[in-house]
Length: 118
Image 1 (cartoon, rainbow, N blue to C red):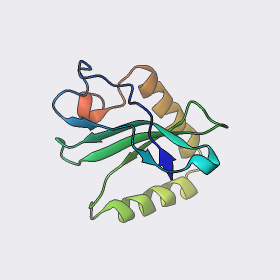
Image 2: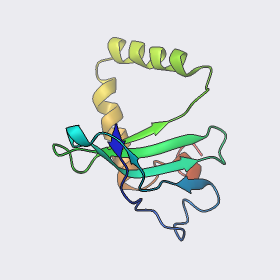
Image 3: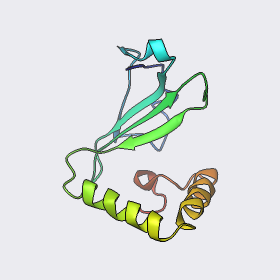
Image 4: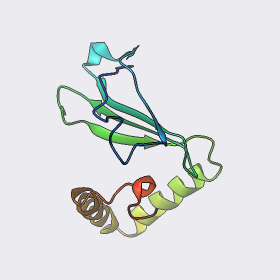
């Protein structure tokens, strides 16, 4: 359960115009564990609609970014494939973290905004 905070995105944010629905401050639980949503966004005008949110805790105030999609028939198969890749190629995990950090540091990690994969 989580508690939603005000979203940091604004209507003037070019990455979010015409393809998102911002979250609200409505409580969605998690108070007893000190967890809360510090960001919530629904991206509907993409090939695969996404729900993006950030979960913040007392231990990790910067939060953990989560992107979730629903009703995708190949999701479980893809997850299984990635697990097999990670098991068979141990260097893949740290390489993935380095690549994700590199893309995020240059703000090219969002395919729906014109980044890599878009």
